[in-house]
Every structure is written in C-alpha cells, then in structure tokens.
Amino acid sequence: MDAARKISGMSPYLHPKGGRASEAVEFYKRALAAEEVHRLPADDGKRIMHVQLLINGSSMMMSDEFPEMGMNVRPMGGFTIHLQVDDVDFWWQRAVDAGATAQSAPQDMFWGDRYGSFRDPFDIDWSIGGPVKG
Image (cartoon, rainbow, N blue to C red; front, side):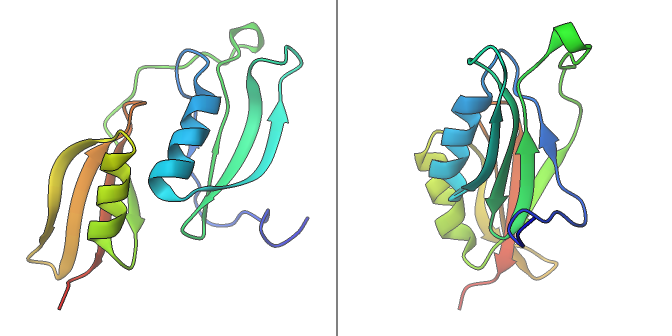
C-alpha cells in the first residue's frame, strides 16, 4: 500500500442516501479539491462499494447503501466535519460556489481562528477553520 492510501488517525466514513456516493465524490472534488485515491465499484455496476478521498491531506471514505448486506443508512445525527485550512475564505467560497449552503460566513473568532461553516448537498455540516487574515 502506497503512502497516499495509508490511513491513520480518525477518518470519516460517509454513506450518502439514495445511491448518491458518485455524486458526492464529484461534489467533494469541486468543493474541497478532493483527490480520489481508490474506488471499488459494486458488482451491480451502479453503486460504489468503497471510495477513498484525500481532502487537504486527510482521508475520507464513503460507500453507497447496501440493504441486501444489512447496511442501511440511518438519519443523520448531530455532527460536523471540521476542516483546518490555510485560507478559510477561499475554501468556504469554493464550497458555496460548488453548491454548498452557507451557514456562517467566515469571520475572525474569539479563540483566534478564522471560521465559517456550510452544509453540503448530502446534509453534512462542515466547519472550516484557519489563521486570521492580516
């Protein structure tokens, strides 16, 4: 296994509802400059069994639902995926331009980061933090 495929630490594993994993991959490529590392299509030729993406150096994985294997998607709970970046405004605007819904525009926060948030088309909440400008 090459270094790009090596997974360490914590990595989110998403299951977009309704057979939308391929659509999600393409969104994350546009919105977050995701790099597709590995894709394993399902035997039906329509769904994704597994895909690994790299986003800003971190791994994120996903697959479609497979109810015939006991893997049903549950309703989303309360969570946010946080992404630490070098330019919050750039990353936030690219995501919104790609179709994410703005939740809070980037602003300088009391804890010392610049911070913004959005919801992607798959009902995942994201926060983006990074250095204060200037």
